[in-house]
Image (tube, rainbow over the protein chains, first blue to last red):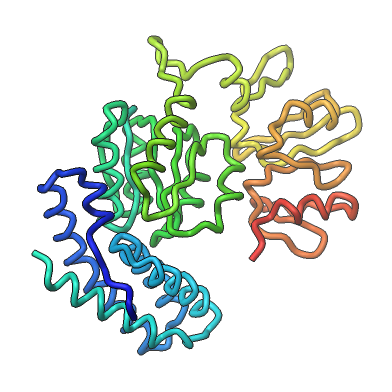
Length: 107
Length: 236
């Protein structure tokens, strides 16, 4: 995967408001791990419909972090999961890991 | 404009709130992580605008707006493009924003809201006769003009020279024709599904073969009206 997460969108929304930027990143840092863990749990339980619901939320995070291609993958994966198809699971996991690494590094 | 944000994602609420902060016309007065809490709030407070997510636990955004008796302006904020057409069936829905929302796109929403917004008048009435007329219908019963809230009307049935209007609480018998009342009812909410029946489309519980279930009434669908009904459904 060549696409890397970035903070361009968050900075655009913040418009120089550093306090918002900090607060928002803290929200992402607390929200994303919970969503990832929910997704993995549902997947493990075979509850694909439920995992699709979480992917729906995660894809928003991909968009926020500037992952245009990652967002498209998540859109397709969400649809696939609803139909019981997990072909994109590995690709999606790769994007999840990239996001996780990124948000762990930012302060 | 007093606004609330309803979204189960904290990050999504934060973005909408921040975007509103840059627009002096919009004032966020409350945020809710689900529609049930928002409903409780709206029972006691009036707002001008709701920024509303669609996919939420307990109650979806679409279900939520159907429970509102006097809905304020609604802007959908969602990651799902699939509901856009269905959303515009409701006259109070001003815009449909797909996440992540950009400041540029949000500015367009602001323009739409300004155009759509009619402030509450001094005596507390919500507006013009035209606006009032869209939500209500007066029927003449024993020389009394009774005001019906159209959101509460379930079914209208032709009965000879009369029609029966069934609401959530009462059934009224009125001297009128189905054709005449059809002209008075908004197409966004009502449709004829049989030569003797007009239904409130929003109140359908289910559809089976050639009948629809509305509350506890089973209403026949005629062959000629069926395609029109099917066309208006948000079918999966």
